[in-house]
Each structure stands twice: as structure tokens, then as C-alpha cells.
Image (cartoon, rainbow, N blue to C red; front, side, top):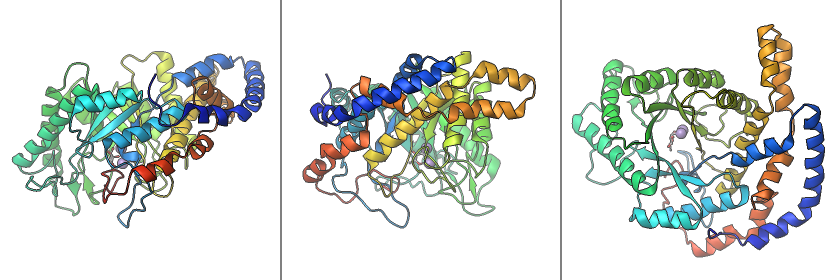
Length: 432
Ligand code: RM4
Ligand code: MN
Ligand code: MN
């Protein structure tokens, strides 16, 4: 049994009075779904099998370039980050793995870190390399780029940093490296677009060649920021072209906040699936840009439509389809543990609703070009309140029926505040 950061009796105590009303709600939903020919138990089983990884950098308060408002008891090192991730998983039961960002999370002793994670019932998801800021004094600077830098020596340093991530990940049990670079230009004329992308490709090829067996390399695009005029890997088309050039184990990662407003992301997802290049997701929500808001908080219907593509691909057994799911958010005004719990539930909610779509019926309507009924078919699934399924899946797995109430009752934040006196920078949050 893994060590739990929250006393299991507290969770059981919070669940007690909620169990009977949940049973009634679950029963009623079961009846309604049965009338549509859907067995609730199969859906609950699917919900219980759903997983999304946690970002180590998400458990500290984020911030903007205008400031950061830290909470008491924020994790100060990777061990404390793991402990907070374990709280999320203990209560929601869908987040058993953690994605590390190096060097923010560079462990002193990988074997010790792996053992600490195992003790908490956690494993490691994709590794992330940070070559978008300078870390060590004396290192070559990434001010003008990393993998696409004009100078070979800087590119070599950035490649070496990615290889170090792989090396570390190998010792931690990770199976993927996600590469997002900040390389780009702030002024027209600053970059020779084709040469910059050519240099990036050359660097990525080297990293790909060093991948251990069973590993995947995930390329993450983003249209702007930190560069505000041009970005080297700016969109999914560029990412796709690069992944195809580089090789079979090089795939694309879609971060929901990395597109221009109103872009049809679910179509991008479908395209990447169709061409065998969808490697993973960073879930968050966005109103204007890479806002890193909580998943499902702004455009829940879009999240559902994305999952409709994902669930269809899984149902159809698209060969090689196994995207990695991760939350990638910045929590500026909420308790990060609470935001991560709610976000994990929202992503799972979108998955479960997408699992309710009458896909055979939809296919027939598409054939007949019945646009109105086709939309209604999707809406029927989207508008079903699946909360009792999510709560029941958590309850059966030993989690909390109401994770926020259980977290607040647990006193974890207060205990952490007492045990973890503040340090200047936790290396967490987007602004470090
Ligand atoms: C970037 C991108 C990366 C994340 C960093 C912190 O915008 O989303 O995935 O690692 O932020
Ligand atoms: Mn991301
Ligand atoms: Mn981002």
C-alpha cells in the first residue's frame, strides 16, 4: 500500500454522508442511460481506467510577468512536488504519474527519487527539457535560441541537455521526451525562417537518434511567446512536417493553449491521428493565448469535441494510437492542488461524455448529410451530466466523492505551511 499524504479516515469520513445521495443519482443516471442503450457500468469502468499525468511545475503557484502571489506551504523541491501530486491522485484517482521538467526538477539521486515516487504510488510520465531560459552561470546563453540557435556550440549544449533528460528519464522509468523550445524572433528580419527551422531539424534528428528503445520524442508547437514576432515551431503543420522528416518515433504534441484564437483544434487532432503523428496532449484552457487556465474552464464543448476525436480513434483501433495525456497549467489565483484536481476531473468528464456518443448513429447521419441531427447526436452526449459516474469511479477507487471538500478538511495546506517555510523561488510555476 502506498503512503498517503492525507489520512484515509478523513476521506472516508467526508464520503460518508455523500454516499447515499450518490447512490440515488447514480441509479437514476443508470436508468436514463439504459433507455439510450448504454450500460452505466461499462462507462464507469472506462472512467476508472482514464489517466492524465500531472505537471511537476503545476503544484507551485504560477505567475505572470507582472508578478506572482505564492501560497503558504508551496513545495520547495521535487520531493515536495511529488507529495502534492500524490494528494491530487489520492483524492481523484486518475493522476498516477508525474511529468518532470529539467533542470527545474533535476534530482540529486534518480534512484532515490524513483523510490520516493513509488512509495507514494506514483510513476513518471514524459520528461520535459527546459532550454528556454538560462540556468547555470557560465553556460552559453539561450537568449537567442537553443536547438535552432545560429551558433553550433549553443545548439550542442541544448542537445546535450535533452540527452541528459533522456538519461534521467531512463533511470526514472519514463518513456518519452517532450521538446518545447522558446526559439523565435522578436523582429522581422531577425531570423532567416528556413535556416532556423533547418537548424532545429538537425538538432532534433540528433536527439531522436539517441532515443532508447520504447521511447518517443514529442514535438510541441506554439504560435508565439516568448518570441513575439516569429516562432520556429509555430504551428501543427510545422510540427507535423518536422516529425515526419525526423522519423517514426517522433510525434506531435498538442497543447490546447498554443493556437490562434478560434482555431479548430479538434480538426488538428483528427489530422494528426489520420497521419499517425498524434503523440500527446497538454490540457489547459485558453481565452486569448497560452493562458494556461484550468482545463474545461473556458471552452468545455471544445474539450469534449477533442475527446470525441480521441475516443473515436481508440474505438476504431487506429494503429499506433496511444497519446500521452498531461495537464499543463499555471495556477495564479487558486490553490494549485485544488485546480489540478478539478482539471483532472474536467478532462475525465470530457472523455466520459465522448464515450456516450452514438457513433454508429452519427455515422449514418453523416452519410445522409443530416447536419442538424448530427449536431444533436453530439449534444445529447455532451449535455448528459456524468458527474455521478465520475464520483462513483472515485469512490470505488478509494478517492473522494467531493475532492475539494476532502482536501479542505484534510488540513494538508496548513500542515505544509508549517513544515515548508517559504523559499525565494521554488522552480515551480511558469515564471520559476
Ligand atoms: C510552455 C509549454 C511547455 C511547458 C512550458 C512551461 O508554454 O507549454 O509545454 O513546459 O510552457
Ligand atoms: Mn505545454
Ligand atoms: Mn504553454
